[in-house]
Length: 262
Image 1 (tube, rainbow, N blue to C red):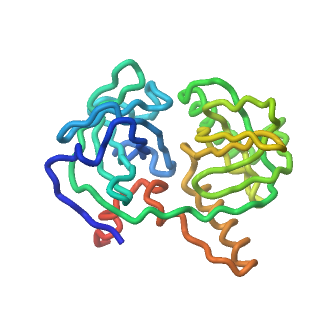
Image 2 (cartoon, rainbow, N blue to C red):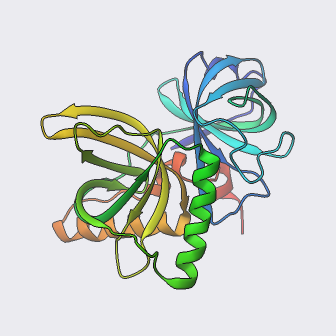
């Protein structure tokens, strides 16, 4: 269920400190990659909004003022909302200024099907900027495409909570999570899924520290691989699976795009 509104004042939908997910919709983006950011509203006007982006700086291939376009997705009036916005300025590396335009879409928020399972996994952490992680991700992916494996990569079996949106896992109590990390996850006979993730929450547990991470840079094909693995496991147990593409935060499309002919 979704609705579309042509409005002249977007500000009523964006309040101070409100969390917003940004999905790269730039015309020059690599359409094979899902790319997202997180931000908090610092100010909003009739058709403008400023967001304090969690991992600031020039962080997408086409992240140029006047060229980059994002889909801003958040919650308002008890529903999910999304609207397109052009990047008009960057202040102090982490304040992104946008001009919103077009229809504002309201949609029903949907959770993504998650699954507890044991898989070989490796987590590369470090206090590095997003630009560094993205460069390393590209180097790793190029190497694995050519060679089929990554020398020295030792994946270890681990219990995780996995979905197309991210991963949850338990680490040692004295482990200090970093804002960003790179995950390698073996799901099938193919090369491991490689994704960049941001830490969105952590909780101390008796058995260690529980982390929840959101994938922010991942091949769409790998989103699909994760989805298929979860669907297969749930089907075996007779459960119900909800496809991740029904969660608008996880796709670089608007609702109206899916209704266009052709």
